Length: 261
Ligand SMILES: C[S@@+](CC[C@H](N)C(=O)[O-])C[C@H]1O[C@@H](n2cnc3c(N)ncnc32)[C@H](O)[C@@H]1O
View (cartoon, rainbow, N blue to C red):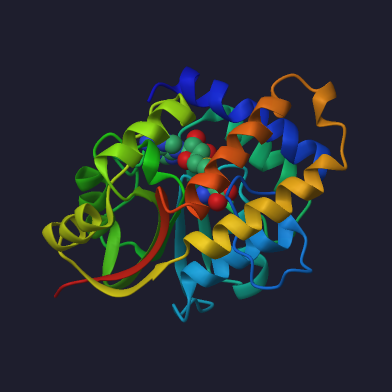
């Protein structure tokens, strides 16, 4: 996906984030129905990390970090040695700086492409990759890069939208109208194996994710998002995603994987 296309795709998301004080671009995970959407977005990060150990000596890499919510929350909660937020789109990095510059735990935000990580081999303890790989043309190349930069005892936590069938993929492509390259669950399982990872956890999170989107859209309605160009359309896009998850056309899968020694 070109940077211009990505930027055009994420401008309305930034409009919604500014209006609502959101700090992430993910769909969220409903653990508690009374929570705000910002809290659902944080819950998705904690659900994906599970019991992955993040200590004061850890280096954590968030690939496709958007405006930095997940990276910032990990920095604030776990105080690891370093959190790197890597993002392809300059526009999102500039906004990540805006959102996190006043936080004492601000991550390091760098520009880069998931297909060619600008990091040394065996230098990272934990990789987080949340709702970003759907944009990657070559997911096996990305997973090979994860295998390279992770330490041998490292952890990969990947959450992504997956298609349940070729038909659901075609519907999703038409709905999302931007370059997306969805894998099925089986394709992910094979790709992890081929890249030298063993799966340690898997959760089909489609229902809590769809509930989170539903609640988030209710919350966003309280704001006059119609006044900002593009954000109204983005709410429609999110509603379609919510319906596709709820009806089982698309899935939202959370994976934990570790390098095979
Ligand atoms: C749906 S957003 C999720 C952002 C963040 N993970 C979060 O949870 O808020 C997907 C992000 O992936 C980024 N992205 C897409 N392709 C990328 C690539 N090849 N390398 C790095 N980032 C990429 C997009 O620019 C966007 O910020």
